[in-house]
Amino acid sequence: MVSPAATPTPLTVSRGVRLGYAVGSFCTANFSAIPGLLLLIYMTDVLAVPPLLAGFIVFLPKAWDLVINTLVGQWSDRTVSRWGPRRPWMLAGSIILPLSFGLMFIGPPLTGVPAALFVGVTFVVAATGYALYEVPYKAMPAEMTTDYHERTSLLQWRMVFVAIAIAMSGILAPAVAGKSVAGYRQMGLIFAAVLLVSMFGSFFGTARAPFTGPQEAEGTLRGQLAAARTSKPFLWLLALCSAQTLAAGVMLAGAPYFAAYTLGNTTATSTLFAALVGPMLVTMPLWVWLARRMDKRGAMILSGVLFAAGALLAVATPLLGSLYAHLCVVMVGVGYAGLQLLGFSMLADVIAYDGAVSGKRRGGVFTGLWTAVESAVQAFGVTIYGAALAIGGFISSDPANPVTQPDSARTAVIVGLTIVPALIALSGVIMTLKYDLTAERMARATAPSPS
Image 1 (spheres, rainbow, N blue to C red):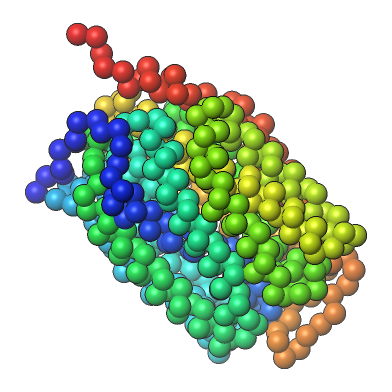
Image 2: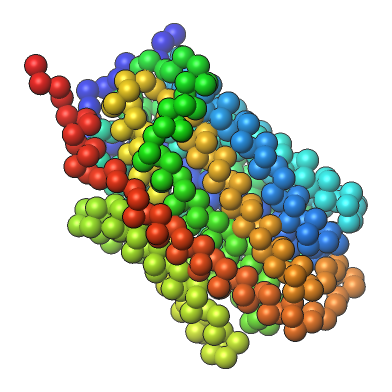
C-alpha cells in the first residue's frame, strides 16, 4: 500500500480530527509532568536514593533519547502505509509506554542504588515507547494544513487537553501517590491506564486527518540530520524552546519540595498546579489572538517575560506567604500557556517551511531531534534542582526515618524554584529575538511559483 495522496492544500481541519489529535496530548503532558514532578522525590523520599544519584538516574535515559528519537523520526518519514507515515509508529508506542510507565512506579522491595537502577531501566523502556508515539505525533500538525495561523488554532485544542492533563498530573497524581510505596504503585497504574486510553484514542481519532506534506522522504538519515543542522529557524527555535523547557523542568522538580519545605504543606503541590494550569484553560484564545496581532515571535517574547517574572517574584514567598506564592504561579501559568502553544505552532511552521523549500518529507527527523532535546533538557532541569539540593545539604530519607532539613537546604529549595528558572527563561527570551520565520516569510516560501 502507498501513503495517502496529499490533499489539495486545506486551510482548516475538521473538529473531529482536531479532537482526535488533541486527546493524544494526555500522553505528552502526563509522561512529561509526572516523572518531572514525582520521580526525584519518589526516589529520595520513598526509595532512599541520594539526591545526586536520583537526579542522575532521571537524566541518564535521555542519552538514549538522542538515538531512538532520531531513528523513529527517520522511520516515520520513510514509512509507506495505508495509515500514512506517522500512525503505525504511534500504535507501537501506545502499547509499550503504558506498561513500562506502570512498572516505573511499581515500588520494588529495594532501596538506595538497587532501587535507582530499577527505576532507571524501566524509565529507558518508557522513553522508548514515548519516542515511538511522540515523534510522529508532533510531526502531524505541519502536514494537516498549509495555513500559518490555522496551525496555531489547531494546536489551541491540543493545549486545552495539555492543561487538563497537567492538572491531573499535578493535582491527582501527588494526591494518590502520597509518600508511600503503595500510593506510588496505585498512581502508576492509574496513569498507565490514562496513557493507554488517550494514545489509542488519538491513533483512531487521526485516521481521517488530511495529509498535505511532501510525498517523497529524504533518502538518508545523514541527509535529514544535515537539513536540520542547516535550518536556521529550526536551530533558533530549538534553542529558545529548550531554555524555556529547562526552566519549566527546574520548577516542576522543585514544586513538591517548595510545598513541603517552604509552604509547610505537602498538599500544596496540588493547589500550586491548579494555579499553573488554570490560566492554560482560559488564556488560549488570548494567545491565539496575540499571535495574530504581534506575530508568533512577539507573543513568544511576552510569554517568556511573564514566566520569568512570576518565577522571580516567588522568591519573596517566605515573607509574604502561601497566597502570594500562588498568585506568582498564576503569572507563571499565563506565560507557560503561551510558551507551550506558540512553541509547538512554530515547530509546525519550521517543518512546513522546510518541506516547502526542499520538497522533501523530513519532519519526523525534525521532531525526533526536538523531542530528544526537549526530554533531555527537562530531565536536566531535575538534575539541576537535585544538584541545588545537594549543594544546600539536603538530607534524603524514607517515610520510616524522617529528618529535619538544615536552613541551607531550605534556602536551596527556594532559590532552585525561583531565581534559577527565571534566569534560564530570560535567556530564552533573548534567543527569541534571533528567530525570523514570520508569517510573511512563510507566505513567500509557500506561494505558488509563477507559471
